[in-house]
Length: 400
Image 1 (cartoon, one colour):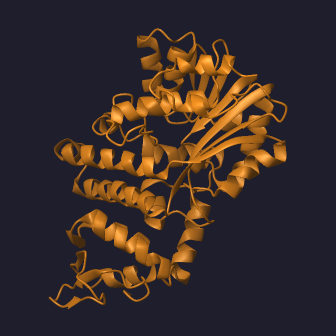
Image 2 (cartoon, rainbow, N blue to C red; image 1 turned 45 degrees about the vertical axis):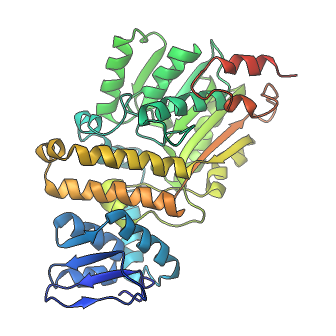
Image 3 (tube, one colour; image 1 turned 180 degrees about the horizontal axis):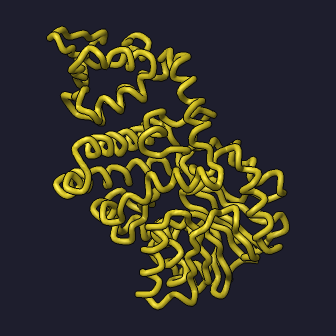
């Protein structure tokens, strides 16, 4: 099993006291397997069964969890799995978790409708559950999430009076930010019931109901015409087989001068998401490659204006989330149970490691109708002051 995993620098400690290590140097951590019945699953489908056994307490990690996971991710480059069983299980999950209109609601409900109070324990004040942008690595999570929202708005060159449609709006932070700071009107679509209720309440409290409308509906039902299309953290849940459908939605809803922005977790090469993450945490999730993302835009004649990879920013974001999660263990345990705590610790730590090691990417793609020329001449406006929306207009007006 260790050999098939690429001989990671870890020690296995078995239930009978025996210890096994194939690494040449000192191990980074010890994986303690508490019962014999756990071994067959680790052999046939190591990703899925390691996650389940860790959450159940049948596997214990002695040492730093993130160091262990990093060693496993690095060693996996020389691994000889997944085998036939893991591939078959992945095919089964793809069929069971298909992102049809009904399937998407079920998948989203599994993750996002488990209680807003839970997410409040470890997200920032605005409840932004996507990659932050850190102008400085020392920035707080709150500062970085506000900077990210300004960054998104600048990338699509928002101007007062424009109309925006957002596909997948979370708890409403970006939609409210766009209306509050950039003078636009927003229609935001989301199929998470809990998130939409929270977003509507925030809009009411801030007096933005007339400028931001939160709609509990599938992105496939977006109607109307808009100046800007924005999607942050939703594409992972669309499913690659539905990209043509999404491209058609964007094409029919954008004006002739329309621009768009898609922010998504991604891959360098086509491959499935971690099997345990798909089974237990994010059912139906499929991070695309850049080439696969282009299947949304190229058939409709959109021009790609800018592509950026912020994977290290997402690693930093997840490190903040994990630190806050660990500080909230008493409250999380009271809401759920110890199995949930271990599962979410593994999810957050594993995700941070995946971005650190380059297993996952974070792509931001800006696009527009092919005839759009009213654009900034350089990218300088993005960096002059990433916390201030005031420079946007200056750079737009300075265009030749």
